[in-house]
Image (cartoon, rainbow over all chains, first blue to last red; front, top):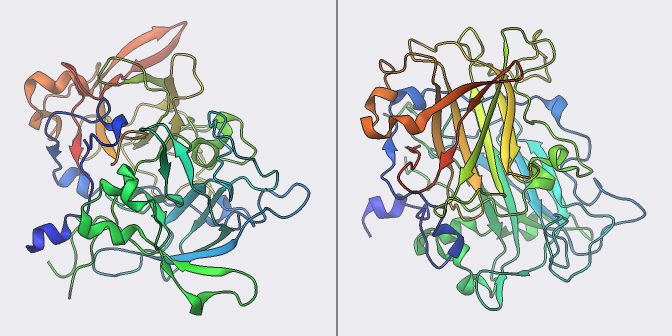
Length: 229
Length: 195
């Protein structure tokens, strides 16, 4: 594998096995971005946007008790491609509950809602680029892409940094999921890069007798000038 | 120093609304951005940016998310977002909507027309995410009542496709609206950028 392939980690826009891409992916070549867009910044979000329990999905939607499921801690670092931490990056997440049910109104999967779990959270990375969420491990769920299609367990991430190219939406998966090989969304990523979407189990980061821990680091697009260039 | 590999992009999926656009969709969770790019006290002439996102069959897409990012009327980007501290005029510069709450799946942002930025024609940066889109789609919206031909980016676009980047001005009961429809495929396929 040459180094260009090594760094080509992105899925194509059109991936026919994921059927919705067929009518929703542009067919014309993408226009190269000139310096005008590279130099553009994105908004900074202040601490005052973030509620006290916004990063604790086990607490932020309680009505009459604790949400059902396996409590986990998901944490990591947001970096540029040179490993430099990106502070004050907005991370928004959303996910299914432990039964594999989204609270979204259009969702029709026949699994129970949890009255004490919304499945949405947000936080800003700290000065070291670190973030941390408490949540419930999401369940797998079926979807309509093909007969008996199931999504692997995953948490959706939306990330807004400070440069225009630092805008990423992705999904975090869990190690060893038997559904990986059957999921066209996961498979759309080049084979050598799929590991970048799988969180690492961290026994040493667990809250003893309380929550297991997973590490998921995020590396943002790096077209911007760097001190090395 | 060895470069790190970028995290791959994945689709936003169909179920983003209760997290990313919760207020608009009526979920019990607050939103930090919405379709109001300006506040109640932002001067400079309020306008609306409306439009529809069409798939390859010409069907309006009901589950897309669109983000706008723009300069203020003086051509300055507000990189300090309101919250801490809030700018006097409450200009936010950043807006986000889903296309799932309007019966025709239109988006409608409330904003002001941006000023020229470093000699470029007034424009708004547009980012799309949706089910069926594995990566961010990025484009730019220009205004039909401005001179765009000398803009450094616009003039680089193939002349036969420039019209896809222009929002059309119309007046609607005294309010000023710019319509910016986005076509993912077909003869009017919108120009997207390789960000």
